[in-house]
Image 1: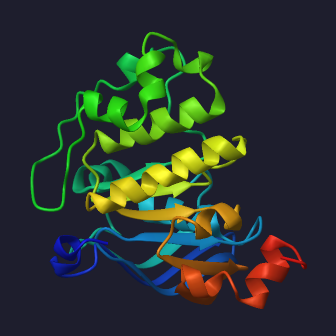
Image 2 (image 1 turned 60 degrees about the vertical axis):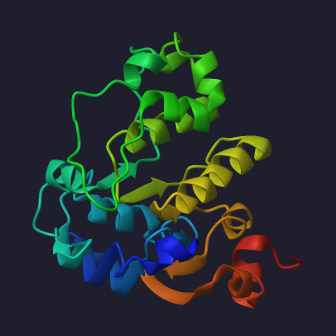
Length: 250
């Protein structure tokens, strides 16, 4: 993280007492979480640990009808009572596991938006050309339909669409699913580039090996609760991480 980014006061995201329950069954019980400016925080855990539940609750939507409570603050403003499109306009962008791509539109059309985010400190609105600079493969495929892209290309396009909304906080839900190892490294490596430009990122990832390489801090969820949290370099050596997610002989 650059000295300029570190000097900017206050975390971008602060969460207090966030709980999500479905039909009386608690799926998430998060006491506290924060993401600083230009910081990449990884949330890891097994299937069913509550990772997607967390990012969906932050974004304000769900496939079911959960009961959600707690405080979510974005850049000093509470947003937990806001509907999803209000959170997006405030600068919280989610790239869901489904990639956020329109299959019947070309890459170029996907990277066109009628929504112009308000300018302000901490918000960088990426242009289409800047997206092409981040992901040159998208420029090569710019006339192809979203449905014609590979999984890695769709992931790049989903991230590009989110960046054009001028996020203060980018939420990524399992970006490495279905990608070849080389593409995983490329997509996640871009997160470090974006963080260096001041973007805050919350990365939900089951591939702990890949996540450790790019995140600043790692949060381990089990059954909806945080059981471990700390700097990625230290967490990678924790036996609980190694045994549960990297393999017993990691």
